[in-house]
Image 1 (cartoon, chains in turn cyan, blue):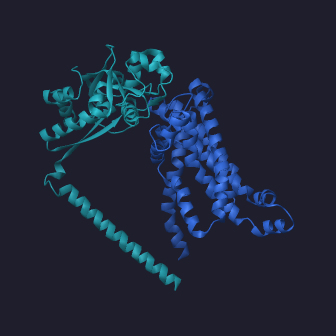
Image 2 (image 1 turned 45 degrees about the horizontal axis):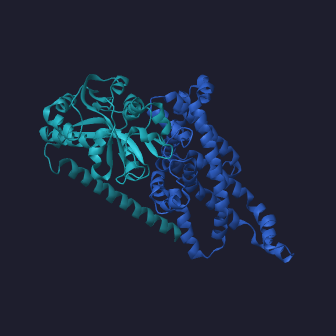
Image 3 (image 1 turned 45 degrees about the vertical axis):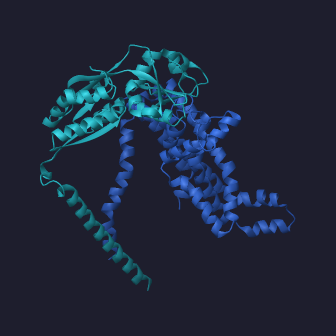
Length: 254
Length: 260
């Protein structure tokens, strides 16, 4: 009785697995050839980009795909130092767009070209609970402050702008700039040092306060592979349509 | 027939075993053995060691103090209530740690459900504090103690407790002198498991408690930061420490897992 029962269960399981496999095959077929008969000829391009480029590179990739219908762009965002670590560990990427020039020197990249610049600003929750007025008020001991980790560009730039006093006042060092922005959005910190462009991206959800300091970081884009699409993409980032998108997001011209 | 079935199992079993063992070998062959003492002696890693040692010990202690009454309640209450309690206790165990951290943020963060009251009433703010690290670690570690302890308490001989009571022992004495010694191996195993889980905690910690050297940066967080920052030797050194601790826990629990 019990053996028969087990046998029956196994058969059901096998049948269910077969059905699932068939489903999967149908899905794969639908996905790859459903909407585009030239699917087999589509080429893919992987772009590793700094966290601060999250929104604008989505737009740039969409514009690039519109101009090159046969190319699929895959974007991966992380702190620049992490991108370099992943590339050096063998991650396959065709293009890197980092938030400082140092990162581009840490990987085996060619045709390194600066395509934008960015400055820091202070982000506070809309009600500004700690009454932040500028860089000087961030060193107040009672204020909860988020900075980027020391090894990502926004963290290094914050140290350059605010000096050791600012670094000592930090309550958390987030792995990337969007982590800092999130902590401000949630109201868990009184202030975070982010890029001006992150303020644009966050809209009314945070209030921005200027930092009166000339330091800025340069964003280099570089080739990691020989693929012609990669060269096309880099050329596109430097072209007027992409530069307009960057300017709209608050980036400065190189 | 039997022979054939076993033969067919060798391949998947071997692949499974390789998947578990090869990463450990990969880690060990990259370990900078000769530089290990100087790497571990660096101020940054020492800070992380101290934070991890303190927070994991406190979290394990809190798991025992708060988890033992919970395990007792679980072992004594009716079946339907127990099922409900078990879900509540097991959920943090199966929850992705980053979800745990997000949940903690919305419950105990400055603007969280309980957190805003704690902040307004006592001026306590848990995120970005060492206490926050302990809370995150306890959240993920306590279930390991509760479940292990409950099993031990339930398998303890209730008849012996009953006998002690009829011989005039007070309830508390019967529990302390008869029940606890019987469940002691389970309680110790549960505490060790909870401590190991607290020591390894990463996702909930970085989400809820942030990452600041000397305050909230634990060994796993320091490992992550070292790897991100392109200091792989440091990351491997820290990983070897955590691996050694894991092996010690396994050896301590050998009666439970290795000899049955």
